[in-house]
Length: 247
Image 1 (cartoon, one colour):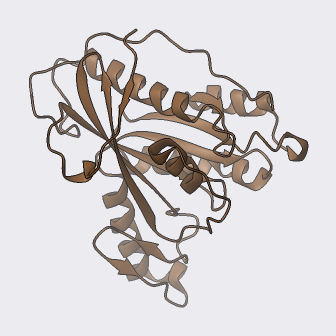
Image 2 (image 1 turned 90 degrees about the vertical axis):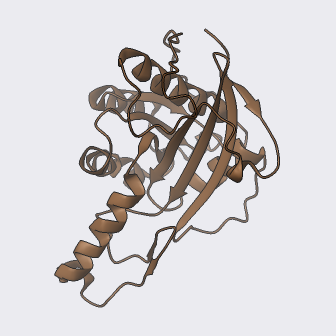
């Protein structure tokens, strides 16, 4: 398997020199660690000072795989159909919650429009829960339904049980996470943004899955933006063993 190599540089957001662009989303309940996970991967930085994101954070990171330059456009934010009364942001507009929003047809339609725009074109998802929060684990099924409802049919998903550095506070076992991932057809990792456990590996595996899916197709999917439309990633990666966290 050709290794995925990180490329760091300033002003990557406007860099058009790439072979492929993958839009990736990190989704999950509030406070599961999505922002910390994003910053750990993109900037190799961690701070416990992050507050819950109401809206969407965005990072760009470029990697090399199989001699191809891949631009990762990584989004994370709080956008969940089960909680439409929350303040939601898109990259172009801000919608404040209205009283009685859940029963307001116009509000629901606006929410669906924002959700569809957010998910549109996403090639891969990291669906995250907190191993110390059973509610976040129970919500995984709802998030999975959102992926199936709003995203590209062939989008790839990795389930991540985050905060495995807090094993003494664990309420969701490794086996429970792995079993749910198998039931949903997802890859599985336990991760820690704080201790930098399986963060890079999770993203690398997701990129591998996307590249494998591309190599199965005779044509590049329209959801992929590429500077070389006929180029293909044909070196499929062998399966990696999902890892729990021995913290």
